[in-house]
Length: 371
Image (cartoon, rainbow, N blue to C red; front, side):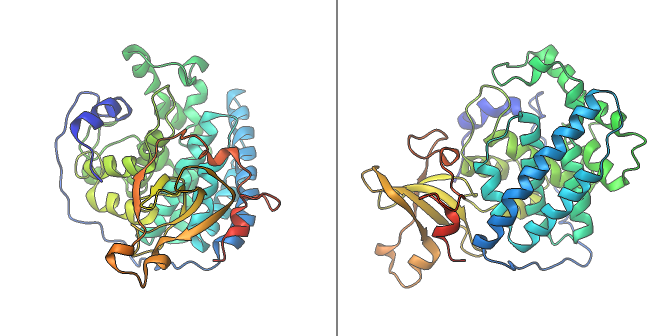
C-alpha cells in the first residue's frame, strides 16, 4: 500500500511540518531494556465483555476531569490512573478488543474520543515494543491527559465544521503548554509529563512546542506522537474526510525517519496491522465487511466481519471470515484476500450503526467469534 505525493498533500495540514520541511534523520534502532514478550491470554470474545464497560468508565472519568479543569480546579487524577491500569491489563490480555470498541463506539465529545483512542493505539504499540506494564501505565495516563490544554481554547476551534486559519492554528498549538501548566503541581511522574509535553514533537524537529528532535524526544512521547497522529488521520477534528486506517498506515510508513522514528513506526504497524481493526474492506470475491482482528505473521490476512455479499447486498446476519485460517491449505488461485479498502461512510458498512457487541444483536461480534 503506497500513497503518492498527490495523496499526501491534502493531509499535510494535519502534520506538524507546516513549513513543508522533509528533512530525514536516521538513528540506530531503539533497544528496550528487558522487553516483555506478550501473548494473547484470553479469547477476543471474552475480552470484549470487559472492555465495553471499561471504555464507558474511561469516558466518564475523562469528562469529570475535564469539567473540573474548566472550573479552574485541580482535578482528582486517580480515576484516570485507575482506568488506565484497566486499559493496560486489557491490551496485555487481548489488544483487539479495545481496538475494535474504540473504532465502533460513539462518543459525545471529540476531545474525549481523541484522547481515549490515542491511548489505545499507543498502548498497542507499547505492547508490541515490549514495554513493561509500569511504562505502559505511564504512557496511557500521559495520552489521556495530553489533551487537557484544549479546555482553555475557544470552543469554536474544536468544532468539526471549523477549519483553522493560520492565526488560529498558531493559537491552537498553545494547548500543549497550557496543558502542562494546568497539570503542574499534580504530582505526576516525569514519564507521564514527558508524554503531555512531547506528544507533538517530531523526529526531524518540525514539531512543537520546543521543536526538539531525535533522541531529545523521550521514548513514550515518540510513541504517543505516532498514535495521536494516526488517530487524527482516521478521525479528524475538522471537516476533512477521514483516511481509511490502511491509508493512514501507509502515510505513516512514508514518514519514517522524517517525522517519526523508523523502528517505532514499524512497531506500530506490527501492532495494529496493515489493515487495522475497524478498516472497511472488500474481499477478492466481492464480499464486504469490517476488519475485527489480525494475527502476528499474517498481517495481510485479517479476520473480517462480513456484512455484505458479493453483490453488496446486506446479509441477514453477519459472519466472521478468518482469512489466515481460510487460506491455510489453499492454492494461490483460491486465496481469499483484501481487494481494496473502502472509504469511511460506505453504505451499509458503518460499524457504529449496529450494536456489534450486544448479546442480542444479529451483528454481535461476541456471538460470531470463537477465539
